[in-house]
Every structure is written in structure tokens, then in C-alpha cells.
Amino acid sequence: MMNKLAIFAKGAATSATRHWLMQRVTAIILIPLTFRLIVFLNLCMTAPYQETVAWLKSPLNTICIEVWLLAVCYHSAIGLQVVIEDYVANQERQVKLIKAINLSFLFLAVAALFFIFRIM
Image 1 (cartoon, rainbow, N blue to C red):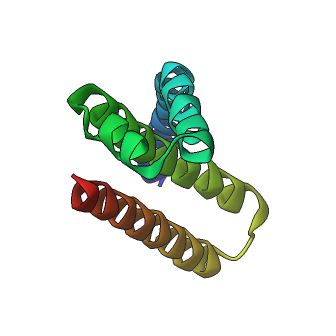
Image 2: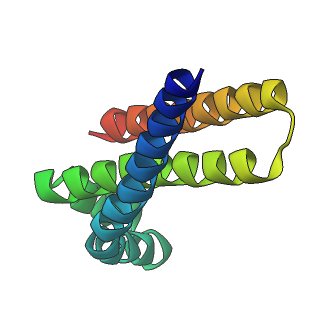
């Protein structure tokens, strides 16, 4: 009995540690990429459409925006999963909410990447 409990506790601790670490890694990745996003948003507000598209077609800018999208979706999904695990008591409801959130962020990431590739 004690061995099963110890194995479960170790698995939960490993998962929590991995989530904590990935939250920090994605946050660090997002810091410099957010500056590139701010430049892009500024272009969207002030520059003509052709200039904005030309900026986005640059390989470095495209990769930065795509990585930002993927990192922010993953970062948000992990963060919301932790909130659900902390504040939703019903285990079955936790699993359903986490799956719904993960699918939602997956859909958002795929849709955003699709539209970026469509512009190119």
C-alpha cells in the first residue's frame, strides 16, 4: 500500500515540477519575443497593409511571431491547468476542463499559424 502511494506522490511531484519549470522557460522565451510582437502590432496600427505584410514575410519576423504564438498558447494552457487543479475539487470535472482548455489553445495556435502561412 505504501509503495503505491509513494509512486503516485512521486509522479504528481514530477508533473508539478515539470509544469513549474515549463512555465518559467516559456516566460523567459516570451520576454524578448514580446518586443518583436509590439513592433508588429505597432505596424498593424500605423503602417499600410503592404508594409505590414512585407514585415511579416521576413523569415526572422515570421519565425519570431510563430514561436511567440506557440509559447504563449502553451504557457497559458499550463497556467490554466494549474489553476483548475488548485481550485476545482471534482476530479472528473478537472479532467474535462483541462482537456477543453488544451483543445481550445491547440485550436487557437493552429488557426493563428494557418493565417500566418496564408499571408505568406
